[in-house]
Length: 85
Image 1 (cartoon, rainbow, N blue to C red):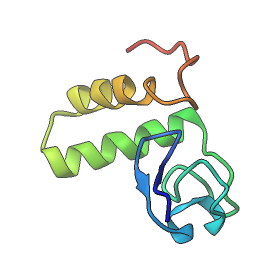
Image 2: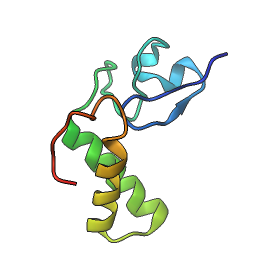
Image 3: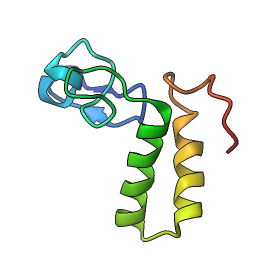
């Protein structure tokens, strides 16, 4: 099976359940999509990634949020996003 990565956060998706809406053709992961498989807003994804970094990396909030923004603009879903990094 071909492993794809989420075009919003870069998470490897190894099976259909890891794709938004359990749709293997959805380019976004279950964490970056709502219950219907639709991509969440920039702010929602930013909040989720920041929260993940806070808990796993034990960073200060501002540092975690800056790192999350820097990571997000690397992915197709957010490349054209012009928020301050």
